[in-house]
Amino acid sequence: MTETTYQLAVMQFKSEICCCGDRKVPRQSFCTRCYLSLPQQMRKPLIGTYGERFELAYFAAVDWLTYQRASKCIGPRNKNSKETRENDENV
Image 1 (cartoon, rainbow, N blue to C red):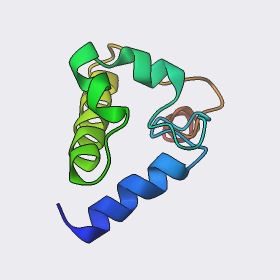
Image 2 (cartoon, rainbow, N blue to C red):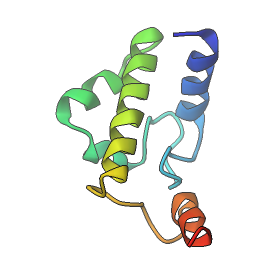
Image 3 (cartoon, rainbow, N blue to C red):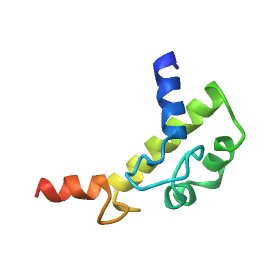
Image 4 (cartoon, rainbow, N blue to C red):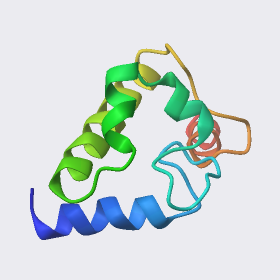
């Protein structure tokens, strides 16, 4: 992974907004709903892991969550999320 992707992962980690658009606690990888949607083996490396291992685990989890939303398995978060607003505007 590059320095840029590492910086992006750290920026998201420190952010108050989850990749789904919902609010999350800074210094947590995802909001509670996204985190609990992940398979157990994907959750473990997101806790107490730093550097390249965290970066790889974070982006793998984002990819998994994106695929699940696209497959309609977990759907958009809430009616106020950025994703839902954008979808409503495109209809």
